[in-house]
Structure formats: C-alpha cells, structure tokens
Length: 240
Image (cartoon, rainbow, N blue to C red; front, side):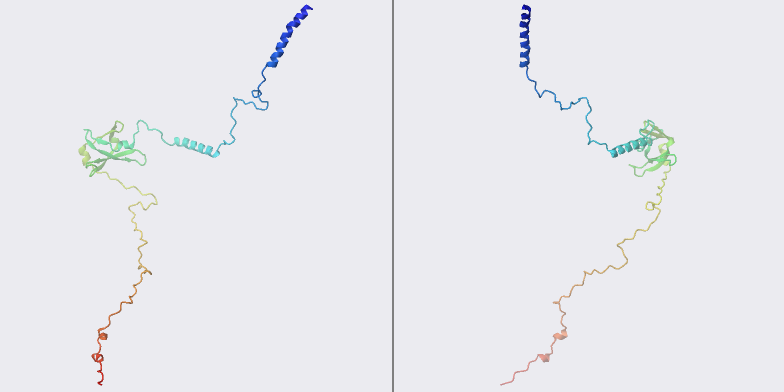
C-alpha cells in the first residue's frame, strides 16, 4: 500500500507537466504550413517550352543553302597563297637590272599565254623621262631571274642592248561576238539628228505681222496740197 502511494505520488507531477507543456505550446502558423492545393515545384526540372518560340522553316532552309554553297565554293577556289607564288602587282613596277647592275627599265605589263595561262614575257619601258618618250620592249619570262620574293629582277640584257632592241608591237583586243559598237574597224555612219529635218521650219502661228498703226497715215501727195490759185481768189464784195 505504501509502495502504491509512492508510485502515484511520483506519477502525478509527471502527468501534470506533460499536460502543461501541451497547453503552453505555441500554435502553428498556418502561413508556414505547406498548402495542400499548391503544387510542389521541382527546382531541378527543365523550364517549360515557350509556345511562342517556334522554329522558322524558311530560316533553316536558308542556313542550309548557305552552308551548302560555302562547302561547294571551298572546292572551287584557292584559299591561300603558297610560298612560291607571286602577285602580279609585286612584279609590275619593279626595275629590271642588267648583269652589271644597271637599270634597264621598270616592268609595265605582263604577257600571258591564253592557252596555257603561263607568263610569257614582261613589258619594260626603256628610255624616256618620267614615262614620256619611253620605248616598250618585251623580255621572255624564262630569261629573267627573280630574287627576294619578286623585289629584285635581273635579265641577261645590257642597257645598250635594251636601248637598241626593237619596240614590242601590241595587238588590238578582239571585239565580242555581236558587239559592233566596240569594233573600231566598223565604220558606222553617225546617227541622224532627229531635230535636224529637211523640211522648212513650221510657221509659228503666234508670230504674226505687227498690226498697222491707224494713226500712221501716208503723207498726202504734193499735188493735193497744191491748190489752184484761181480757186483761192475771193470775189470782191459789191459796192454800196
């Protein structure tokens, strides 16, 4: 009996403490509780596709055409100059020297083989002063020695030989088929001037002769001005 009372005495304070703790616990904030109706957002999910962002089939086709054209062009053109290749403007304007180092003249033009595309000769201006009165001679390309990446060109030709060499004869460029205007040999009559006609100029209806001045009368003849002397005499009045 004593043991039972002791157990009861110890249990009552513990029960009272638990009940007091439940009564004094703060009420849960409904704003902090997750809503049962709000969907849970997965932060790792991919963003939803934009329904307005649609692919343009025309743009895709254009890009494909440009890519195909670029790939085709890359097979038909040269893309880089090789170390053993020279530009034409490196050659034109360069002075050609003789074996003794004398200047023969500057290269003005290049002659190219129309069948093989190879360079046949260079045109050098010899003599003259500042390009006036100089003579054009041609040197075979195979007889030239090109050094320092086309910055120095020499020939097996002395300055005296260059001055005595015959002048190179150029030909006229052939006219295109059907192009009669560019052929200087075609002597065409000048076009007739549509304003120059063989008929007399038309009379301008607005250009009339000036009207006669009504105040300008012809002078009276002298005969009409001369009156008869007899008619000018007056009859004397009768005497009273």
